[in-house]
Image: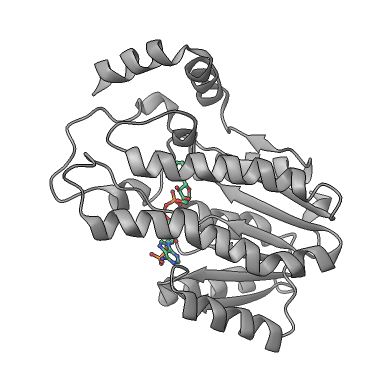
Length: 264
Ligand SMILES: NC(=O)c1ccc[n+]([C@@H]2O[C@H](COP(=O)([O-])OP(=O)(O)OC[C@H]3O[C@@H](n4cnc5c(N)ncnc54)[C@H](OP(=O)(O)O)[C@@H]3O)[C@@H](O)[C@H]2O)c1
């Protein structure tokens, strides 16, 4: 994928799942990778592996909680001091909270909102000047098909991803002449640490997504990067997931509600 040759990519949530996979797939093409997450020792191991496999690649690890304004400001200062100019921003870090809204723990709900909505928007806002200056900037927002429909027992998570979908589409239009593309990837279920992080101490009795829709992280990331390279607005990786969601969004809301009620 010529688009990524020599790029400087920032990947949030690089310590696990899709973020780690984005790092692995970008490594053979990128010039510099900036890996961000809270678990530094995992990022250090990933950096060592990637640099060993790709001797021309520079990997920087930056440990931070991207929901903390002070840490994000320090990060921006560090980028400036190091003269690192990001031209690919992968807004990947995200978390869920599976269970009823009524019994949810407020701290976790707030963490979902802070990470999936505020941190993604804040980082994009702070890095946009650099992305524009580069003349070939790209933003890849990792959303979810959960953002396409109201999803009981994932109510807040689904709503945050609906925000990401709307924000990405609108920003793409605003930036159409600015040399910065915006692509939104909407995965269905993927084999990562996500379910464990979203689970509560008392497991939720509602149905999860059918196993036949679950995809490996490799295929999701490959589809997302192809969509960025082709300057597509939106991609739903996997034909089965795309088909199911195509039907779901085409249903009248009353019928969709009835279907969702049966699955609760
Ligand atoms: N897996 C799925 O089924 C699925 C489906 C649709 C969409 N998605 C989306 O895909 C994205 C990646 O999720 P995943 O499946 O790869 O889950 P994951 O394996 O749990 O990875 C989440 C990543 O986010 C990082 N993170 C969490 N809180 C953070 C914070 N406050 N500051 C910085 N980094 C933070 C975690 O690193 P640390 O803990 O080290 O900070 C981790 O690297 C998310 O946006 C998710 O909503 C996932």
